[in-house]
Length: 274
Ligand code: PAF
Image 1: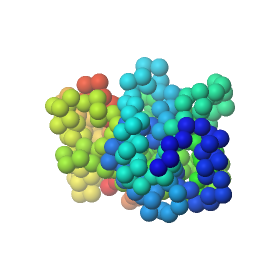
Image 2: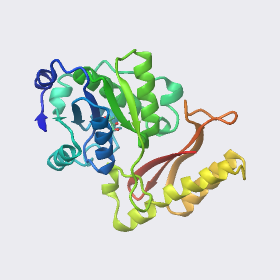
Image 3: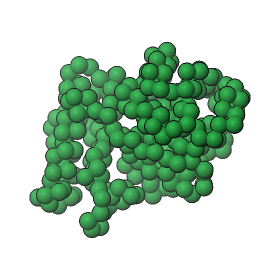
Image 4: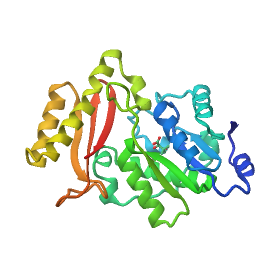
């Protein structure tokens, strides 16, 4: 695997390649990322992964400075998973001047759920994803379903901007306890790690309750929030939505339940398709 830090060098290395598959990441990589790279390898073509902690998607009080940075370990994981090129630009390389041009995502999707507590988050995500797509010019790009709302926004951006890239979605990888793998899990203490798995358990219970229609959806959400509080989490939301646009579902449509909650100092998100 070649490690490349500069845009010009990456473009030179990829010159003439038409079927590049791209996996954008912020580093702090784990088996979930390895599964994204493996999906990229199966999609054919040379695989490019990026590692870049994107300041634009962090609010001032968020964890930009403590976000895990482990490029050497990341490189080993990527190489073992079959990645051909690791693009790891510095901030100076990706944002040599203040990034005045930004992608403004549609508010109906970007200001709900994650966007309700993180107002500039999806602007930062869409801006860097567009910039990375413009640098790598892949035929396909791979995103995890763990960040469900991000996946939908990226798909919408690609569609509305007619970007010539296919988006591949990959299922969330979990540890044995059910906890969704996340770079931020490294903030959890041993005991918090055990407690954190209860979030997934709760989503499973919600899925069963929705499927068996044992209660009204609003009641299920309210009950889940109360349960999380009782378990020591500080929940931001638990929401049963339709998969296509994360709006309230009218009838029998494919659903997803999404949740975000803080445990100690770690903010966890997870979701489950119902
Ligand atoms: O999902 C992530 O890790 C990030 O939001 C992404 C897509 C790499 C953009 O910085």
